[in-house]
Length: 432
Image (tube, rainbow, N blue to C red; front, side, top):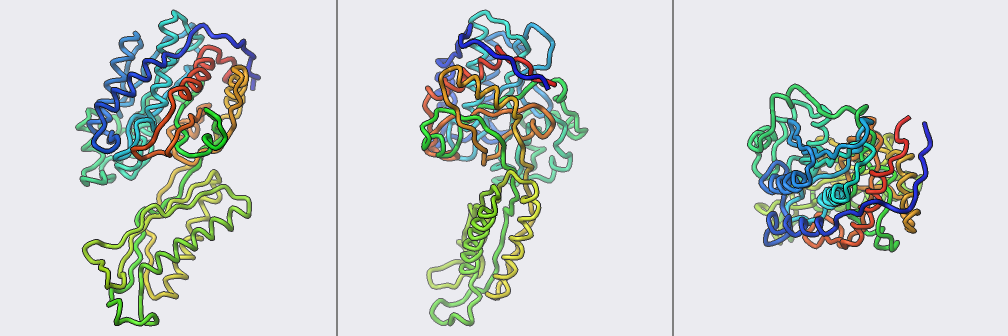
């Protein structure tokens, strides 16, 4: 591999941050509700957001195309036909989410292209604004639908088998309504060839508290955790009178679910002590509103388990550890615990050369960008696992993510956008 070239500190253009600010406001106004932002995957809100970006890209004179899954690509031609630099993220959101998850990366990337165009600068390579559909798993219980489809890696069976969580209609139905080419998708026709992509850079809000705690406006991501998920865990006991049933004769699903939650936390502590990288979350835990009562022993509890790690080996063995824990609790408490089907995503390592180059560019701006692992899933993982040199720039944000309070300072986006612009204009050697 060839070492990266050095660069000067000046740039011939600046990102158009005013454009990004205006479009954040428009996205909020047109896809926001009484509480938060809702841009459902292959729904009206996501379509509106894509149309906004397509409109602005066309005004800049970029060449637009959409693939069978309706991912949007807006290309600024470069001086050479070397493999292109792709930059961008997604525009869908979780229900009642925030305005910056995904959109920050798209608008930072668009601001970079707008600045280059308005300065009359021609980049060394083609730069492709990449606006991806259906990254969020909240709608179809399937992650990275758009990016997987772009590489021809969306299984045809998923189109009919995967159902939307709120209306139980198939992914195929919703994609067809949005205008997708189902015949091409069923045939597995991808449009992205790794050999034709020099790099994929995804800016994204951090979605966590680390950068706030460190006082850093941005960071370079080293890797994206994969996941092992039990989405539909059912703990079944026996409903009983709360006053008439002694402890020894209870089959209490609530206590069993509580013990399972605590044992999973102990497992997390033990594995972390062994040096493993992971998180374990019980994100949903509920009794049945139609059955539960103040004076009833719980007969059923539903919960979810989400384990994430950068280690493929841990993701492979941890589900069996969790099954063993569940079986022990079930035997002792006289209940059944069905963990249900296992789903998940692969971890992905970011390209070390790109990470070093972006870190060096930040230093040239007088900034110290920390490097950190990423706990959330991102489309960058799909690019990386298809052999594309991939990097992520995290942008500091407050109040977490996936909630209406999600926030971000535009100055932090400007910092990340400037580093992204420097890379687009001075990519150096990004191939072997």
